[in-house]
Length: 349
View 1 (tube, one colour):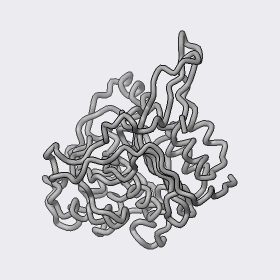
View 2 (tube, one colour):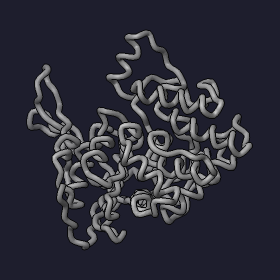
View 3 (cartoon, rainbow, N blue to C red):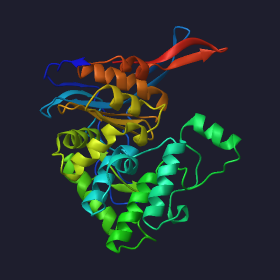
């Protein structure tokens, strides 16, 4: 892989405006995605040569020195990063004293696909800390990867807590609570010592205050950041000293990306094929990436359309100067008609 750094000139396009500070966790009155239709189109859905849909959103690219290279939309407005916050959550577990490394630490930062090796390691980790799947407070779910879900159901599987994609993160959270004598029955309460530490780690890495706190799909507290803050956080992780919690998390994720995602996932492909890259997607079409030299990006598709993630990610990496064959694989999002390919979702910037 070869790469070049683009011009350091910052460009702002399609700013749509934020909504102001929130009023606290769970109020429903905090900041949200701007509803302004002037938000730029990041991806188009093209079928048979006809644009039948558009995905709007916001995106930011950071240069190696942390300055803004490109802004599309309003990356200063708070969003819920969803699972893109997981590296910070894993770093908090380390700071609290839990000794994890290798595949175990990668799984603590994972949205795993529910493949056999993921579930086997979650069970092993639970047993190592005297826990069982019943201790998890993840909602029962099927494997995240559709191929794995089909196989799981065909084998007679049912929704379980352990198959939920956040079970590795929750296992690590439970384990550090047991280690410190913290209560486990309310480990997902925002006021819990672990979750207060998570908030501190997130704010330090992002260089900004959390705008509001909500509840993620797995039940864990969800801290809102701007996309610029999220990109800064990923940059902070890749540049962190190897002995720090942040550096250890980044190293584990990059060394074992299949445990962070799965064998059929773009985060895995990118971290495998572009050395030194840290990549983590989140639900509702959020993506954050940092390259080894500190270049970074973050974006969100306003409507949560996951089909736009790959094309937008590939284009954003190109604009950061990345040249790698894997971008073609990540950016490919074909549309079918009658079983034949008749179009694609494509980046529009």
